Length: 248
Image 1 (cartoon, one colour):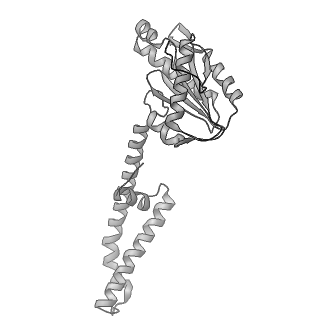
Image 2 (tube, rainbow, N blue to C red):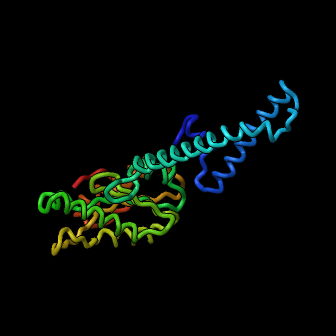
């Protein structure tokens, strides 16, 4: 989130559209012109040549200056948006990173939402056997496959390494479990030309009838994920209050 006086000025004075730019420019000119008029009335009275003659030098100097300032603010807006996107996006997969996920998901997991924590099984073996380039291909392919499973309101992010998280909005647990089972069974990945492999995933799920804060939901989903790994991987496990930590 942007903050500070400069961010406020950018948001006010540098709209994204051309129409907004023109409207803001006219408003700024009117404001400066109003200050100019009040000053002239206070100190000089109405000029003999009329306001048009009096305003000519003002317009010649002020209008280009204001246009240049608005163009600069527009550039600052673009730069800030780009930096924001870079800080909240995983550069390899194009998915939100942990920071981006937290920002988009909001502080709470609401009634009917289901959170999935996912981890690619035996991912280290891919890097060790086929190289990191193949590992990167695998991550991109898994990210694309996860996107394809989701609706418009759902959210998927890469938390780091081979770990992903999915937020299914307002979906019954049985339906979310079906999605998780389908993902866990495997995703076909082309690691290199002529070399393909089916990657399985371990998935942990948690749902809340009532709202729960996001860190707690992530903790519960992680516990279920660890249990899925301990139980043999390539499966989905739903968190329950009696679930104890187990790492396989």
